[in-house]
Length: 516
Ligand code: C2E
Ligand code: CA
Ligand code: CA
Image 1: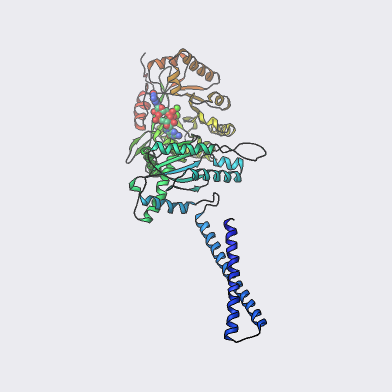
Image 2: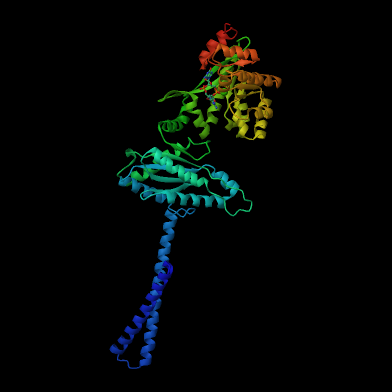
């Protein structure tokens, strides 16, 4: 007999028992105390009172059941996740705080995220998305041991508190869970298409300073430690595989950079450097590239690879690029007014801009503000934009060309779609990636490839710029191949605006900087 049936039998027994008891007791009381001899009346009265007693007991039990259901509903509303049917994030905070405060084990905070959850919802529907979440919740549950806990924290994200021995142990456990998650198969769909599930994990190892004796402090700190685990996840972006990333010093710095970026922009901590570009035939200055640095108030002078990838992820790059663009416009205008005959300067443009509706208008507004000819500015976009919609990019490039900007394709040869890109997009300049150039220039075959690229570009009327030129041999090779422009440490390092003004624009504008 199942639990529900047992309870039913008990309830019925209780009701009958109450009725029978009252029936007998009533009969006795009436005959003893009221000296009533009429058996018939005694029986009728006893039955009526017995029935009444049964009804009272029945009502009482109903009342208790309603109360219990109400309490259960309130509990579920407060502590149960509707989608997975397991504890929700509020309950998790309490449970996790209690586990940590016991100090029986060392723990790691883990954030497990379904990387392609938006895609799943979009392509497979919300029901399928929910089924997947339930599937994951069950998987996690079956992998936890006593003293561990988890809950769904947001759409496709779970917070897990795992006992910690070492990084390797946690990694192995999580990889097993992620592998199982990716085993998910879509069942009973007519179109037979598969919803593949990709997940990743961010891990923060909870140290003693994160454990508090005060319960409220501990609860408060739960979101802090899981915030760090979530931040470790940002390292996973783009990898798009079952991947596990640990919070470390580098992630910590990234957190600091993220919280400081707005302040830094307002306080002019971002500094624009210019790296000159030279005509490879006569070594005359023909242009420059603006490269940003961060003069951080406590971390010191930071190169762009420390913060640009982060800003690409959090979107701040859009503001920073605009700042660099405006700084360059302001300087070009100043040099124009000084009669220095400035050369075209290129600014790096993140691919994020290309999908902002007001991007072209914003550039135009800044250009107009400084009354600068657009021909003095070149916009560098990387070839990775090829992964985006070619139609959208073509349209943006067309509008930029109408204003008069030159467009260059940066890092050409570093990706897999360079030639496709060249076929579809109207660019004026091709910047041959320094890595490509370094690796290939050493063999005959490599040199032939470089020669062919330069030749192809020249047939298309596209100017070629070789990046990362460091040696005289490289210069000679490029000269021999008909490359137009060179940029690299051989000629000059990126330099502050004042140095560029004094050393390049004023002194070396027409000087021959290479002896052969
Ligand atoms: P990039 O656009 O490919 O910039 C060229 C990088 O090569 C620069 O590094 C430059 O200093 C370096 N370089 C120049 N000549 C040589 C050389 O001869 N040898 C070697 N090994 N390296 C050379 P930097 O300034 O550290 O910039 C790194 C990347 O950061 C840039 O690569 C660009 O992708 C990004 N970046 C820099 N400034 C900005 C910006 O304002 N906006 C955006 N979106 N990205 C930027
Ligand atoms: Ca560039
Ligand atoms: Ca480049």
